[in-house]
Amino acid sequence: MAKKGTKSTGTRALLVGTAKGGFLLEGDAARRKWRIAGPFQFGQKVHDFRCDPRDRKTLLLCATGGHLGPTIYRSTNRGKSWSEAKAPPRFGTLAKGKKSTRATGSRGLTVEKNFFLSPGHAADRGAWYCGTSPSGFFRSSDGGASWKGVAGFNERPEWWDWTRGGSPGSPEGALLHSIQVDPRDREHLFLSMSSGGTFESFDAGAHWKPLNKGVLADFQPEKYPVFGQDPHCMVQHPGDLDRLYQQNHCGIYRLDRARTDVWDRIGDNMPRAVGDIGFPVVPHPSDPDTVWVFPMDGTKLWPRTSPDARPAVYRTQTGGRRWERLDGGLPRANAWWTVYRQAMDADGDERGTGLYFGTTSGSLWGSRDGGEGWTCIADHLPRIFSVRFAELA
Amino acid sequence: MKVHVGSVLYGYTGGRAEVEASGATVAAVLDDLERRYPGLRFRVIDEQGRIRPHMRVFAGGTVVSDLRARVGEKDELHVLGALSGG
Image 1 (cartoon, each protein chain N blue to C red):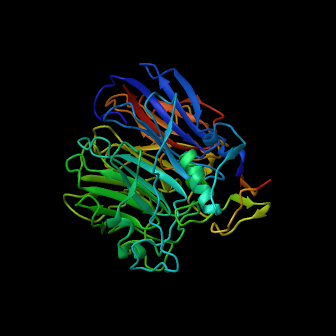
Image 2: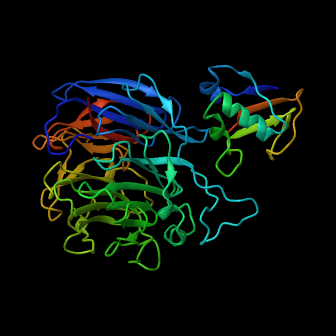
């Protein structure tokens, strides 16, 4: 990802993870033309594909084969060659004959997919985090070559309660995502789980506390539990690091962490006919009152399409008090797709912010004016899981 | 012993469908395959020692469910992607 709030100084690129591999699009300085390369790891599902913002060179790509188990690949030459992690994320092995219990360190789980990648703190060169399905939290200290489970999360007894004993949760399985490392403090971490909720650590992951007050869980008898919610995407805003936003299964929320630990449902201010259900939330590079979301039909059966098949981005520039529809250039009708949680990103331009999203139908869209107007950058790609803006050295 | 691998593993064997490995049990043969082709084993066997749901291992033509199964030098091992779907 570009350093937020700064002008681009390298090659602008979009890293796209799809159901059939990864693609890298290099843009010109005006962000008008994009040259596509790939697919990388063709035939494998790529749930996340990111560039290390510290060296602007190292690319990590999560891959899961239809037959093969999950792994992580690394490239330092823009995808021309790849090396596989020597030790991809894996849970601890449960001793033969031992039963998985709440108190057990290792619970006999198997990583089914590596779902979310996050570079570590700027001062922690080589550090990366990975969230998996089932919900596991992993760390690499060597640029993604080898990974270890964070025992303070994966193996603590409370994990059993937070994840309901590792239950599948969402249709895609239990997912750990939205790993955020506070730029001010490398030991201050956030993560979210679908399902499970959002959690915060002040000691580099050794201990965690739920951070879900005020967040609805309408799919269970207790509507405002301590944990068990279904955050879809949570971000720490680069313009105000004490401000968090989340797009949840049950609405859009903002939390001003320095003032309170209770989330405010700012999605109540969305148009009622559109609702406030969706997957991604993307922060502006510097303005803490500005975020973009991509609403989805959440009325009855959750078809995972845009409301009325009329896709639109919604933007607030008032911290969620007011929202505006941005659909210039997008299809006006019969567009039966949506955008997944990792599949929308912004570049670092404070004015004329570039926004990018990839759809479940395999189209990649871009805007050079903060979402006012959209053009299709690429079409007919496989189903898109992730879109990450990067500035390559 | 001779080991036949499915196309899903060609990325590890350099495109070869037939490779050599040795060991007295299926697990030992897979360990030897891992030494020769790093990364291959974890794509086939998960961290709990189970064959992944969409992979199949055959020893001497018989499907393997227990990796402790003994194999002889004259046996052939097949490590294949399962028929999963249409």
